[in-house]
Amino acid sequence: MIKSDLFTTLQQGPLRHLEPLEQEIFCTRLELFLPDVERPLRRLYAHLPNFDHWLEKFIAIAARAYATRPAALRQLDLRRVHQPDWFQQPDMLGYVAYPDRFAGTLRGVGEKIPYLKDLGVTYLHLMPLLKPRPGANDGGYAVMDYRAVRDDLGSMADLSDLAAQLRAANISLCIDLVCNHTAKEHEWAQKAAAGDPTYQAYYHMFPDRALPDQYEMTVREIFPEFKSGSFTYYEAFDKWVWTTFNEFQWDLNYANPAVFGEMLDILLFLANQGVEVLRLDAVAFMWKRMGTDCENQPEAHAILQALRALSRIAAPGLLLKAEAIVPPPQLVPYLGQGEATNKECEIAYHNVFMVMLWSSLAEGKVALMTHALQQMPPIPSGASWLTYVRCHDDIGWAVTEEDAAAVGLNGYLHRSFLSDFYSGRFPDTHARGATFQFNPRTNDRRISGSCASLAGLEVSLERQDWRELDLAVRRILLIHSLILAFGGIPLLYMGDEIGLLNDPSYLEDPDLAADNRWLHRPRMDWALAEKRHDWQNVNGRLFQSLRQFIHARKRTPALHAQAGSRPVWTHNEQVFGLLRVSPRGRVLVLANFSPQPQTVPAHRLHELGFGGPRHDQLRDQPLPGWQDITLEPYGTVWLI
Ligand code: GLC
Image (cartoon, rainbow, N blue to C red; front, side, top):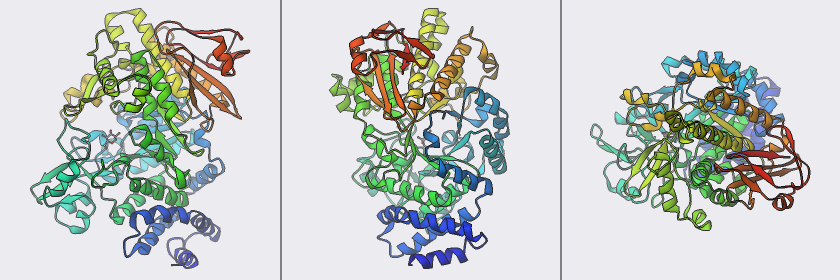
């Protein structure tokens, strides 16, 4: 269909109730972004005889969503379009929480807005809250209805209300959209199980083991302790179903354009509830290709690019966040590369940085971190990292053989060391964590544990060792100071701001007991949080220090996400250096990863352009120029 016909069809169809100007806005955006819509969709579906029909269908979905977008959200769209770098500003601060564990219900979350404001939060990621399957549901990542909220949390109307309340407080709401799989109880899956071929084509189903066996030669097992292999057999309908994660999570088949259409519709529906950021879960797995690991396939990127282009037309205020916890070379493309520059997800988790923080703390050295981060390709100007020290998931040691070898380490042995160190096996370790998903075939071991427990707080409290306790607090602050300075949106994980320890109570719940990631998903301790202004106790010291760092970040324009972020050698193998240089200003971050004081020599500071008079922006105090800088144990400065 030629473009003018398409516009007429839309104006007479989904857009018909809108004012002419509103129609015009849609058509202008469509005209601008149509090539960005078509390019990835062609990559996915051009071989289908009715490609044009699907293209028009997807555009009609976008038009319907646009036509029903509430006025307040259209206003938001306008603001975002006029200030496209809003999420890259240094005043951004994210907070991640389970709504029930943080505040009981969605309404309860609304009541906690003052607490979030006290910290300086501008972005709130509420962990899975759409209706999950009953019983075990992988922490909510097995959704049976994307258009309903989990019963005990409230309703969809409560979600919209909360989004509006947060928006009024200048906090953007982020929720999860699990787009790789549905619960096996989802309506589509139920119909598929009942034998409906239309819905069987929504999933990857096989009559026998022939293809699954072939695929399994190259795919990796994600939860080897929960089940072996990536497929599950169902006797009731005599088929093997692709289940990358748990048995009850069925992978969707995006080779079927109907699946793409459904997900687009859901995505825009959620955007129209006032959700400003969608965390697209497990995107690396969305496309399968025989002979590969079935992760990070070009088509998975095409799906994201098409979703981005269509949402830019219908709801340009929406941000897409990629959850792809994959090695560095595969990670960066989720933020857009080549012809997709600025045309894929706007934000993605910097899991490599997170891993490197823990690796450097364990080793007391920064060579691997410096080298690995130096190797990361640059990201587009319109994209940004999410930096974090902990999240609800385990830590997988994303250390490549090449990076390890470049600094004289053996990748395999280093990863084993890190697992030993953080699971508490390593002699004299300060960390208290647990092994998650040991894979005997590869010896891969991931780690569960809260930030505070991994950083040594739990052990030091137990031993009443006050020197160790001081070091643990310093470690926690050190890694947080780095996620605040790196560039992007720093995410605080609920409870880390007051040093919540591992919580073993999940063992009492049969639906949770098998999954030790619940160790670091505690309930908020509001009694402790009440004491957050008291510097005398360790929790208050953490909260207040973090708050001070957050304020320092907010008043430092040079930390804008668009400013380059370059790790530099400091001539001290225990001190990490990060240089942020842009027209907005220059910042040199120095971070001591050892429990002893460490010095960076004056001549090196001079070479880096910080020889003369300087100021520590973190504590807002002048530092003497022209001399060495000595950092306290686990100490850090932000020089300007
Ligand atoms: C993502 C989630 C994780 C979940 C998995 C499957 O990785 O973060 O918690 O288990 O997807 O949905």
